[in-house]
Picture 1: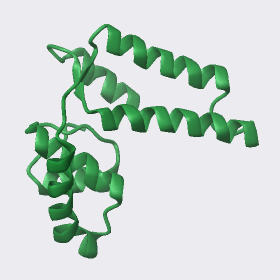
Picture 2: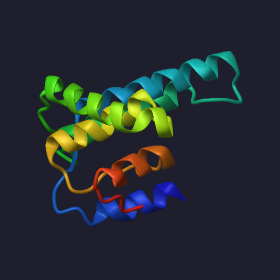
Picture 3: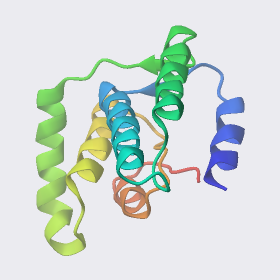
Picture 4: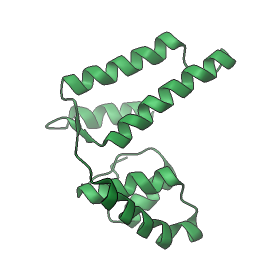
Amino acid sequence: MNSSHADEYFKKLPGGLQVSSLVLFEFRQAAHFQIYLHTQDQSKGYSEQEGEQMLQDMQSDLGARELVVLPVDWGDVHYIADRLSKTYTKKEGFRFADILHVATALHLGVKEFLTFDIKQKKLAQQEGLKVPF
């Protein structure tokens, strides 16, 4: 279900999807972790071939500028993340990655924030970002 929403959204984008290096790292890490899970239990994760194909597809998307990496001032992101943490985490329990991704979006001045994570969506919306799905 999530993939179909994302596919429809991406088809309507006038240019490539703008991402940070954090998003790319998180994707690569997730693919590597899924390969590891599969080596431990073949009913979990992705085979090495599947995982490597996903990573190659991402590289192709970067080469074709379907994914566009925006420059980030990580010092500023950490400053914003600290504010978000102080404001929300004690009351609502946001995780490190949720805070860091939303802080990056705020730093970049984006208007829309793409996520399927319910907690991350809530934080983004509390900070005034539109979450289309």
